[in-house]
Image (cartoon, one colour):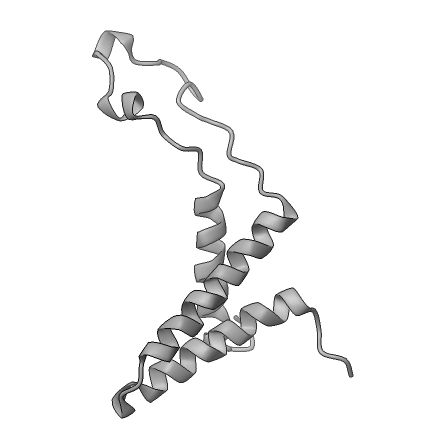
Length: 106
């Protein structure tokens, strides 16, 4: 963010959101229907649930999927008016893939 690299910031924010969503605990259908007011849990933390723990493999798969989605979307943007958007999506994918591949050799 300090370097004002909008492409990297955009890619990283979206990927962090995807990782955060992947950690969410699935909600059962019964929980969505709710319960009577008198049966509602009361007190601090009674509705909290521990988030899922992602493995290193899970994180890598999510980051790869985010990069893949950007590359797929860029491939579909073929009109000349969409060239800038396609280039931005490819650049975002490159940012994400660099995190997986590690730093470039000096």
